[in-house]
Image (cartoon, rainbow, N blue to C red; front, side, top):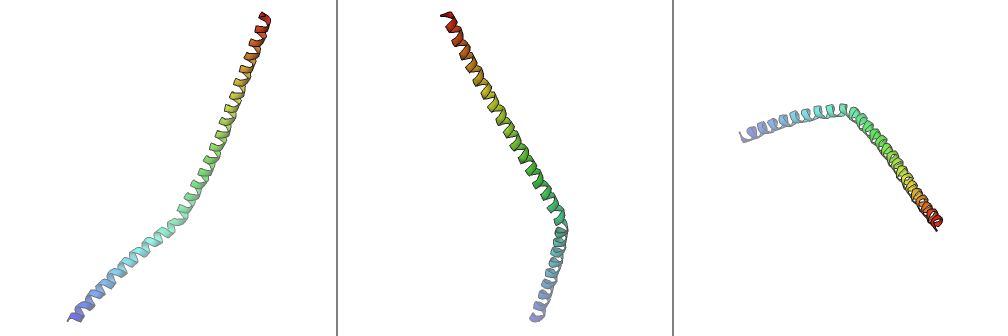
Length: 93
């Protein structure tokens, strides 16, 4: 009797494991079928990141150029102002 009960329990357990295995295999199949779609999406996002990084680098270069140009203009204006002050002081003397 004990052996029969043990056998029944083992058979139930085997059925349970088979059902679980089947469910997991179905989930794997679904995930595997979705993989190309997700890979494509990932590649598009990577391309977008590269594009945005390039735009950011261009923006930084443009901003640096603008700042450098502004600094040069300010220095030139100060130099010109100093030169004009020196000239006006020389004329007054």
